[in-house]
Length: 187
Figure 1 (tube, helix red, strand yellow):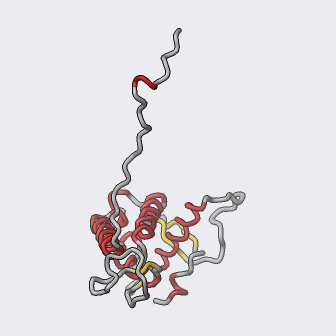
Figure 2 (cartoon, one colour):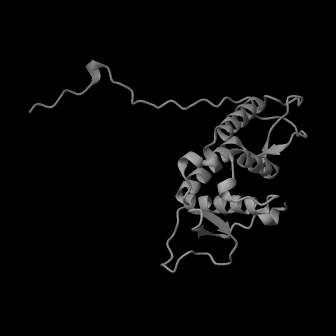
Figure 3 (cartoon, one colour):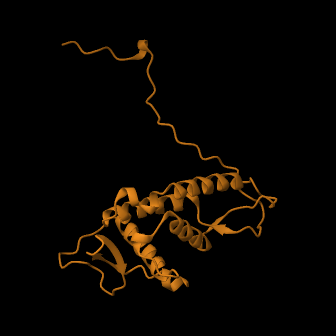
């Protein structure tokens, strides 16, 4: 499959009434209805492009896949395919810069998709699947294998860069000592 095939992101999603699922189909039109043009948010536009790209990937898959037959394994295959277009240097364990966040010299380690990009992509595709008629319990983007893969990518990239990804703790406003708090208003 070549890049031009996957980058056909202007295809339109049309309803397949037989399966009650939406299936991406190629078209040169850019809107699905005759209603006035509405401006979509950046997130909605990206979600539409991602959905169309995944649909193109399914059509170019050998043998071609329908969305209803897509599983978590196909989603993982798609994520691994996307790695070739990544821009994040991920050091191998044999690299002298393994574990260094800012290596001092170039190295031959591969470029991969960043964990944060993959995580956001899966979130958008998961939402798009359900918005387009998919049932949450059959959503391949929410499969356990996909969650485990994302965790593995996050951990391996963190080790390769020497950076830990820890959940951000919610900041609470600092409490003033009793003596510095303003007096309660009198009613």
